Image (tube, rainbow over all chains, first blue to last red; front, top):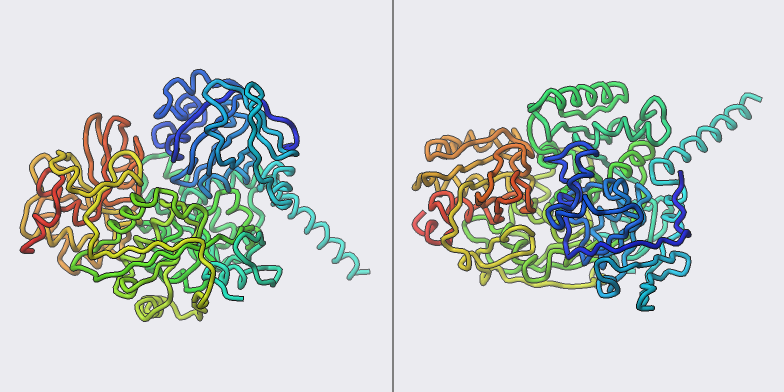
Length: 180
Length: 426
């Protein structure tokens, strides 16, 4: 199923610091299954997080979010995080999020836009993050068309499959034409 | 137009055939795909998730996919043994030609040991430390599992051309490896993301003096400061290393005079102190003199950052004259069987064992909570890649990162010391 970037995302904020590493997001060395990960994600920074996070919440963080090993933030989607917004994002975490169509936005200054428990809105078509309580907002750069397409497909896996089917159909037609 | 190494690399590999500049997006042709355990094992499930009901239907080029069962060899559980068996079946079914199955070691080291990476190539791997191949003038970087599925099918992948940062290292190579100190020092000075999304080009008067081992450490750690690539230029040292391992032709990468860099950082290593990263982040760096006397329980040398001959040789030089301190577990893991053999033939292993060190089977385990767990309250100093909380088991343990000489000195002193105290007179 595709991910619709154009749908407004509105949620309660969980705020984290700089250089949050993928070992903290996915402590899979200790908890190898998704069910266990859901009970322990981010606990080294906020022990209450796995207990109190609610579907639709938004995570904001400082610079270099998702540094360390290449591990996707699937567990964050599983516990209901609707969007991740950070001052900057490690390139592999960003790539992982795009690959799995997990909404992530690089917004310099976001940690001064909201405090823990505030509400934030992500308006992708307008390219702006808004704190409705204070009226403050910050612009951000939209993705290039090629990456928006990956989100629309629901991730790179589905994107790869669609290409395969398209090319197989084309090759089939070409073969048929040659035979005729 | 003048180009950085990254711009030249991606222009050469651009499927659209056009010149690209920093910031451009492109579809690039891939020269090699390194799949270690983490990629190979879940790939079947990912293919099914994508829609291929019988798993991955093909790989784009059977000679360009390298599968190495590095993280789990020999296997430490039934589950892992069963997963490795699945990988073997998949390799057979897909006809993948290069498969390192029954050989323990770190994939990145084996890729270089066996000449599977050549200068000027665009090589991707399912591991963040794939950047290490930049040590031999290759454009190499880590990609995600979903990216790998795409690469395996098509031999292509999207990239954004990175901006480039020039890291100019000047000074004289001392009689011991200093790459770990260099990268830690830079992370301490400029932050653990000073090269976020960028391509590092190492240069300066020190660069030609650096061994391939030292270059591998610096390139591998590019990812610890956020980089997409971390490359050295081509020189005689590289040429000798590569030509001893592969006969395939290659086209080296050289930056043009006048290429545009987003940043330049200079460091003179002659004035650089020994440094360590304190718990729990790579950029939490202080001169070793600020943490003198910190009692340690475990010391380690290994990983894709520091499991090489020169890292182990310096430890052996220290242990030739000193025993491992009582109450300290000193773990040393060569990066590959080839490195292990090199150390063995040089007599290093005998010295290490006689002095009380433990030699661990080559592999990634020493850098993870797989071999040598820490208990609550324990302190470890390690020349491996990362010191995140819980990286070696207990979240209540403390991990310091340091160079191999600093680690060996701490192992014999039982506490963090300035390595000069131990090293003088070696």
